[in-house]
Length: 242
Ligand code: IPE
Ligand code: IPE
Ligand code: MG
Image 1 (cartoon, rainbow, N blue to C red):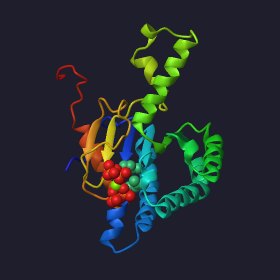
Image 2: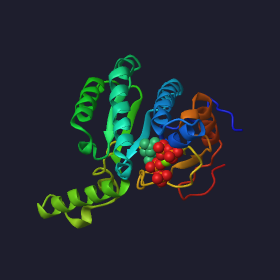
Image 3: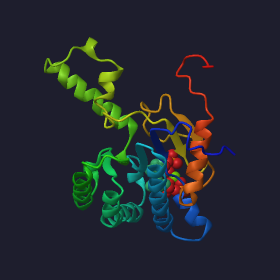
Image 4: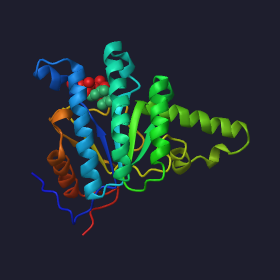
C-alpha cells in the first residue's frame, strides 16, 4: 500500500479508463445500465478528490469509438446518463470552478447531447480550476488519422512543408492540443490493455491498473493510485536521478 502524501508531487494530469461497470452490475444481478449509473457516482467523487489535491486535468474515457458496437439500448442508456450528468452537475462544476472540455468525434452523438455539451462547455469556459476532459466517441487511431489529414491539407495549401512536421506540431493537431500529457493513467477492472485511448499522449505516463470495478473506485482508491505514482521514478529515457 502506497500512502498518498499531499506534500509530494501531485500528477498534473490523470487519465482514467473507467472500466467494469457491466461486470459490477452482473455481480449483483442488475442490468448493465445500473452499473453505468453507479459509475456516475465514482465520476463525481473523483472530480471532488482531484480538485481537493490540486490535479489540473482529469481525462475520463466515457465512450469509445468502438462502443457504438454495443446494443442500442445500452448506448442510449449511456447517452441518457450523460444528459442527466450535464443537467444535474453543471451548477456544481461552476461552484467548484471546473472547466469542461470534450475530445473525440462527439459530433456523432445525438443532437441533444451535443447541445448540452456545448452549453456546459461555454458556461464553464472561464473556470480556471480543474479541467475535466471527457472522451466521447473517442478513438486514438481516429484522432491520429485526423491530425495527419489536417497536416496534409496544410501542406497541400502551402501553409507548411513536410519537413516542418515534428512531435510538437503533430501534438498541436490532436484533440488534446494545449493539454499536458497524462502523468498517470489508471485503468479499473483489471484489464491490461489501452483500448484505443490516448496512444500518442501516454508515451511516458505511469500506468496503474486495479482490479476494482469502476463503480467501486472511490476517493481512497484514487488516493492509493496517486500514492503509488508518488513512489515511481520517472526517467523519460534518462538515468536515475540522485
Ligand atoms: C465501462 O464499463 C463503461 C463503458 C465502456 C462505457 P463496461 O460497460 O465496459 O463494463 P464491462 O467491461 O463490460 O464490465
Ligand atoms: C474502454 O472500455 C472504453 C471505455 C472505458 C469508455 P471497453 O470495455 O470498451 O474496452 P474493451 O472492449 O474491454 O477493450
Ligand atoms: Mg469494459
